Image (cartoon, rainbow, N blue to C red; front, side, top):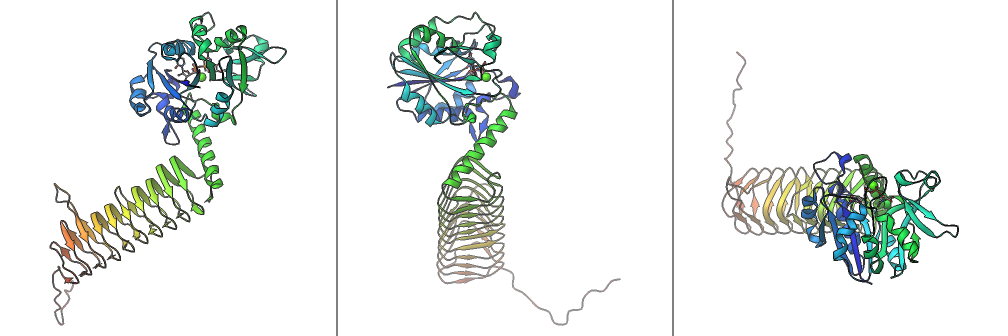
Length: 453
Ligand code: UD1
Ligand code: CA
């Protein structure tokens, strides 16, 4: 069955006290509305409609890649009003699923449970029973337990207010009936709004079956109205992600001290120490060990590589059995072949480093192509920038670069060459040559040290 999915995101979100649309605030590094769009996109034959209003340009600009139908609701008059604006775009048959842009942790599995029950004469409601139902629409049932209506908090009688089962807001209604129901909505209620929830009583009246589904957990249907709720959902999501990583074979030394802001894929026997942050898409091969306080963003790390504490890796590829850190910084465009070693206080950028090569201490290697089994001495710098342009350094296999050398690019060091410590290399060094490029040492005999006057 084709499915229209409407994501409501027109609300003002004033309690966020923000210049940015509420739904663009991030949970787990991803804007809430993008999480909802991503989840919605996993459903079969999904036809996405995004209702925007307050700060709608921002939302539209941030969600373009989903190619959802953007529907403007400039003067929001309730959830029913929002659906009415989408009505002209809904398909004749199929069903319409309504989601909220500020309810980010809804799971595809729950939505699938709903769609499995959907047909042209059935309306599916996602409900939950809460100890404290204050603020939510209440699910009203008859003596047989059939749902007959949803009553909003502000319109509810004392006995209705006592109902613990509430409307999560997520519902799936058959398009064959929905158009007529939406057209019949009025705003004669306590808030003077068009309530989408009024379609429930119309469905009951029209003999449409109303069935309910419950989410797997409460966080799935939790909405964000302020930054306290945003932080609570962030913790919840981090906890869920930590559990999934452990179930997939990663050891987390403290599952409450890891932050995954994006997607982290781990092989078996990955070990992650405390306070690590993973951003964007990060893939860790089997047996990778990550020390405390590391930050990895958009990178892949091959099997059995060890990353020691306080290392930052961005937009880079790291091979297998590498040894990195502590305090290493791999900037974008770094590619380490297997068994490479990057030690403390080493910065790399656009650097291809061959198998088994070592840059162990205090170096900057940028715009460089380096072969295998190269040894780079402490304090070596590639001078890649002349103040205007960047230039490339090429280092072939088996080169030995003495400590505290400067390689002034563009420059080539050929296979098996040796650079004497402290050299400033400005010219090509040929195969197996030794290059000295430093002032010669002179020693003076019996040098009289100056004395204090
Ligand atoms: C709504 C439901 C209520 C349910 C609750 C769950 C109605 C009438 N009530 O109430 O039964 O328990 O959600 O959280 O549907 N929005 C628009 N355009 C509008 C109005 C709202 O896009 O004109 C969006 C908001 O940005 C928000 C969502 O719809 O994302 C819900 O709106 P909100 O005003 O919070 O609804 P509630 O009054 O909480
Ligand atoms: Ca709400």
